[in-house]
Length: 116
Image 1 (tube, rainbow, N blue to C red):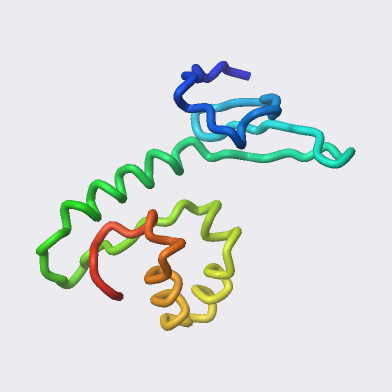
Image 2 (image 1 turned 180 degrees about the vertical axis):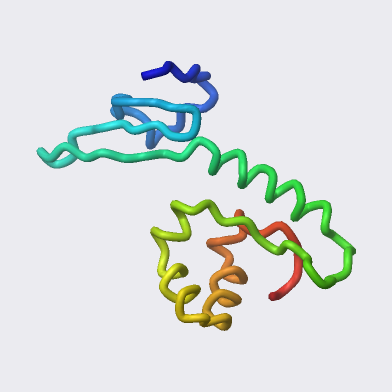
């Protein structure tokens, strides 16, 4: 197990009480007792960086035009598999993918402004 430096500014209220079990360069596994049961969570470190990069590209796309091959979103694999999106991707359901990417809850994954 390799230590990952943690800065106090990175600790949010919902992090209080979690104990780190293991940490690698791309994820941190922690545990906490909730209602008498041990709960584990896995946080993907690169996801935060990806969302920051997406936000930067999203902001820079203001006034740009759509074009062939335009990257409109980047979704971490763990989010893709945790959402209903993967089932729809496998079925070729492009309308669901458009709906999901246009939904305000998923704006962090967008890299280009506009409606898909």
